[in-house]
Structures are given as structure tokens and as C-alpha cells.
Length: 272
Image: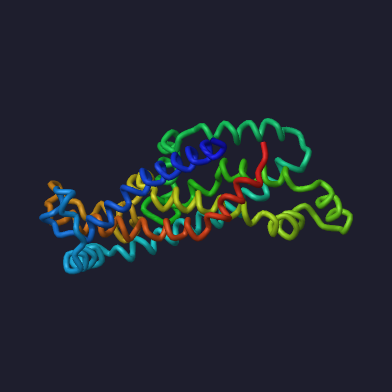
């Protein structure tokens, strides 16, 4: 009887995991299945020839590797700029005392409640006036500031002992030196957690690239997959579409599985 709560908890977790991973497994199996078997789940038997044809089309019908490279450039630039901005801002809100700090923190918390779509029109108009539409800048610039990143790192910096910061100040370190030389090496779990969240969010983002990108060579992975679609999607394109989706999704799953311990530690080290 003592083990019953543990068994029930693990059962619930395993059930949830299976529900979440089932669509990905179905996508992979379907990308390896002949087109004639798509509509019959009993015939989803992988075929080497069918899988090779679907993945060949995914790589040749559209420049999928170019789309993935665009995703790496955009997501990497966004993450680096977010870290450069969010970490100092979070340190200031967590450890410095200045007028307006509470109001700024309230603005950050309020920004967490604003959906991405709400400010999209004014941002789009601003980019259009500066002639930045259909560029990498249009894909990167609106996401440089991250309210979630500031909040996450602020919670982490609040958990750092005050004695460590005071000792660094007595040794002559400035505030920026404390941030980058003292606290950042301790914050790698939080950096890893935020990196996973940021990369997954912007790698999978279709809404914003669909608005600001017209040139196919600048398309990000989700937008690039749409080039497989036609006005009336024939069955022959389903295999290539799902093969492309598999190739785009797999790197994220591998990255998350490789960094899952860092992700859990990063979220666990923060405090309210």
C-alpha cells in the first residue's frame, strides 16, 4: 500500500509521456510508409524504398537544408542577444536598489501575460518604415527582449548568496564584472533551461515569419515546410511533407534529451 501513490504517479507520468510522443512516432512511421497505406493505421509498416523516396523529395523538392540553416541563424542570434540583454537586466532587478525597480518588475511580469500576436501590428509597421521587412533583422529584432528570460534569471540571481556578491565587490569587481565573471558560471543551469525554451519556441514559430518573410530563401523551417503544400494537397506529397516535418523536429528532440538534466536543474534552482 505504501508504494501505491508512487505507482499511480509513475503510471500517470508514463501515460502523459506516451500521449505526447505518439504524434511524433506516428509522423516518423508515416514518413517511412508507402503513400497507399496512409489512411489505414494497420498498414503503417515502414518501407526502406518509400522512406528513401519521401526523404529524397523533402531534400530536393524544396531547399530544406537552407530552411534549417536559416532556423539555426535566427534562433542562435535571438538566443545570444537575449542572454546579453536579459542577464544584466535580471541582475539589476534582483540585486540592485534603484528608484522604479518595483515598477519595472511589474512591467516585466505584465509583459508575460501579453500574447505574441498583440504587438505584431505596430512592430510590423515600424519594421516596414525602416525598410527591414523580408530580412533576418525582421526575424530577430522583435524577440531580443524576453520578459520570461528576465524573470527566470532574476529568480536565479535571487537564490545566489549575498555574501558572494559582497565579497566580489570588496575585491574591486564592478557590477558587470560580477554578472559575467562571478554569477554567469553559476547560472549555466538557468542558461541551459532558457536556451531550450527559446530555441524550441523560435524554431517552431510560424506566425511571425509568415508575416514578415516573402523571399523563400529566408524562410525558417516551419515556413519552409509549407512549400510542400499546394492548393489541393495530393496524397503523393504527404510523405515528403511528413519527412520534412520529421527532419525539422528531430534536432529539437535530440537537443532536449541531451540537455534535460540541465533543464530540470535550471528550473529547480529558481525560487519565488
